[in-house]
Length: 254
Image (cartoon, rainbow, N blue to C red; front, side):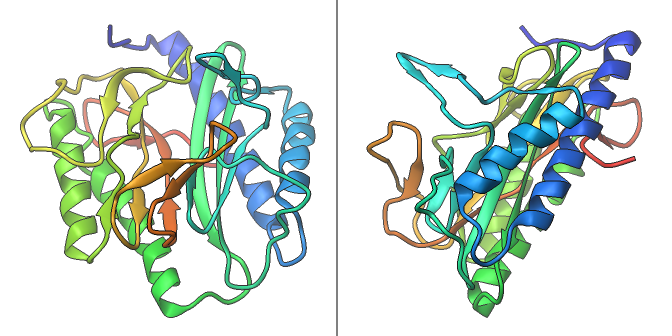
């Protein structure tokens, strides 16, 4: 069932999303040559405590597994759900995506950004830039009266026109009292199909884009998703409110 948020709920959700954006901003400023992904993850816990929120990712259940990190921190060919470790130390040329999901007063804010560490190749920098741009192309279609497929088709066209592939096994989603709510928001599809967008819906729009082919594999930890061909991938995400007018990006700092 798709949740339509009341004004009271949206007031709290806006706060949750602003906090999620602030946490992500602070982590992006930390991401540099020589820092480990474990240090970034531990810092996320401390920053969340500073903002009186908690991680929506920590101990998130998927079957018998519980996610062990406070954020998802994925490097290079890791598409999503990377787990911070002391051994994974960032070096120049890496790209790292940080997916920050917080719970504040019962509502979730969800956002992701991919950043370049030091100096990356022009090809990798273009991948990161295209992924972020495709997210905004999708957000532009998040209009009342449109359908989810309008978002999906716009993202897919932008990504594929640039020569990249969209990941198909994982999608954007509704977000609110729970991290993953209806509807699913794929990054591929046909315009005019899917759930009708209505004012009060809140959705996470999050293209995951591969430099090479879209095929994936799951790592031995049961969580980390990799590109099968080992080529880099990038990930961008905002939580967005459907309104009577233009879409409202909620995961922005005040």
